[in-house]
Amino acid sequence: MRRATTVIIGAGQCGLAMSRELTGRGVDHVIVERGRIGESWRSGRWDSLRLLTPNWMSALPGQDMPGDDPDGFMHTRELVSRFDLLARTIGAPVMENTRVVSVAAAGEGYRVQTDQGAIACGNVVIASGACAVPKVPGFASQLPASVAQFSPLTYKRPSDLPDGGVLVVGASASGLQIARELQMSGRQVLLAVGNHLRMPRRYRDADILVWMHLLRLFDEPFTKADDIERVRRTPSLPLIGDPSNRTLDLNALQDIGVEVTGRLAGIDAGRALFSGSLANMCAAADLKMNRMLERIDAWVSGKGFGPFVAPAERFAPTRVTDEPRLSSRLEADGIRSVIWATGFNPDHSWVHLPVFDRKGRIRHHGGVAGNGLYVMGLPYLRTRRSVHIDGAGRDARALARHLVRRLDNRLAA
Image (cartoon, rainbow, N blue to C red):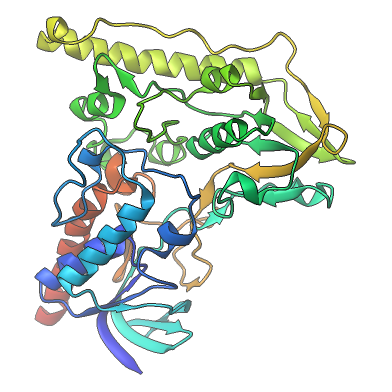
C-alpha cells in the first residue's frame, strides 16, 4: 500500500494551489485526479465558455495575470494550459486517470481507495469541486422519450442538439449563456426562470466585479456572515465573459427572441407546467440589483470619486408579459431538447465518514472538517472568493497552515 502524509483529491485550481502550499512547507503528498489535470474544465464545459471573472481575478498561485488586458476574459482552454504550467512548475505529484473509490477511516488516519490501489495517509484534502453533479428534478424522468436532456456539464455546442426548439430550465449564469448561444444559432428557446440575480456587466466605467471588490464584498470572512448557509445557497452572478462587455439579463435575451416564462414546476403527460411567479421573481432580482447599485453610488460619493466616473444610472425593469405561458405541450410545440441549468452539487458519495449534515453536505468550519479532513472549492468556503480562480490560493494558504500546525502538534504529543 502506498503511503503519504496527505492525499489531495482533484487537480483543478484548488488541488494545485494546495499542492503548491504543501510543497513549500515540505509536506509530502499526492494528488489523485480522475482524468487529466483540470479534467472538469477540459471535459465538463461547453466549447465557447470563457471565465465570468476578468483576468485580474483569474491568476493562479505564483503566476502572472493571464493576458495583457486586465478586463479581458480567459477561455477555458487557456485556463487548462495554465493548470498544466503550474503543475510542471511546482512538480505536482499528480496521479492522473485515477478514480477515488472511497475515503474511510483507518487507525489514526485514512485509507484512500482508488481504482489503481490504496493510499494510507494522515490527512485528506477534498478538492473535487462544487459542480460535479447537476441538480436535476425528479420529474425529469417524466419527459417524453423523444426529448433529449442535457446539463451544462454535457452540453457542448448547438449542433449537438436535435433539430427543434429548446427548453432551458434555470436563469443561472450557465442558463442565460446557453440560452443566448442557442437562440443566436437559430433555434427557438423557451427559458424557465426561477429564483435568480440580475447584474450589469459594467457600471460607471468599470466592471461590476471591480466595484464589488472595492466594496470588499468578496473578502468578508465566513465567520461574519449573518446566515452562512443562506449565503452559500445564493445564485451565481448572471454574467458573461465576453469581449464586448455586454450585459446578459432577461431583457437582453428577450431582445433576441428568447421566450421567458416562470419556474418549471413539473411534467404531466408530456406537458411542461410553469409557475405563475415570473413577475415576482423578476421584481426581486431587479430590487437586489438596484440595492447593489445604491451601495456602489454611496461608496463613490463617500470617496469623492463622482467627478471621475460616469454618472449613476438605473436600468429598465425586467420586462414581463401580462400572461406568460403556464404550460407547453413539448412535442406539439416543437421542443426537442431540455437543458437543466438548475445548479450543481458536489459529489462526495465516496466519502465514507461521519461528516455529513442532515442534507448530505460535509460539515466544515472554513474548510476544516476535523481530524485531518479538509474541503476546498465550495461556495463561500472562507470568503466569497472561494469559488473564484484567485480564491484558491488564499484558501490553500489558510488550510495548509492549519494542516501543518496539526502535524506539528501530533509530533509534539
